[in-house]
Length: 163
Image (cartoon, rainbow, N blue to C red; front, top):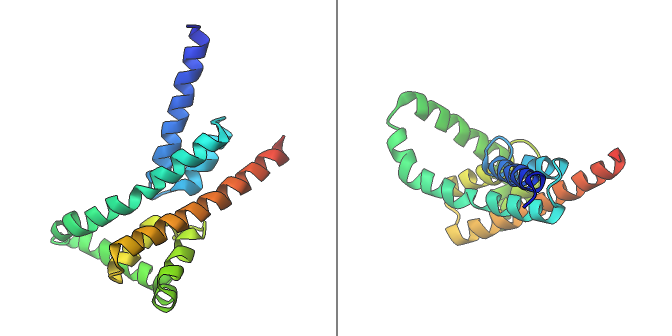
């Protein structure tokens, strides 16, 4: 095997992993992972699928965290203050929409590719408002899909304008 091919393959795998990590990260989600991967030359379909599925993984991870780990961490005052701040922000930012529109409101909230929206906030909101887990997972997944499509298309358009 050609050494340059192996080097390129390693760089491509590294870029896919970084895009995937951005998609799991609360600092970016797929909103950052998709553009990162695309601007680093990863196949546009591969990057969409990898980032979308990585972002979908956040919901079960967050629910596990909120159900199992959060309870123990709330005993520490500095964590409790931060958790209450995040809970208030989630209720204020999404509360009325989700209360009024339920499942559809959660989809729209997660779908909007803006800071403060997405699956992390959607998971917290569905936990706080005690939305049925299977419905919340479906709403978050649909919202992530549409958000990913929006970001993917906008990134494609931006890349066409740059070339």
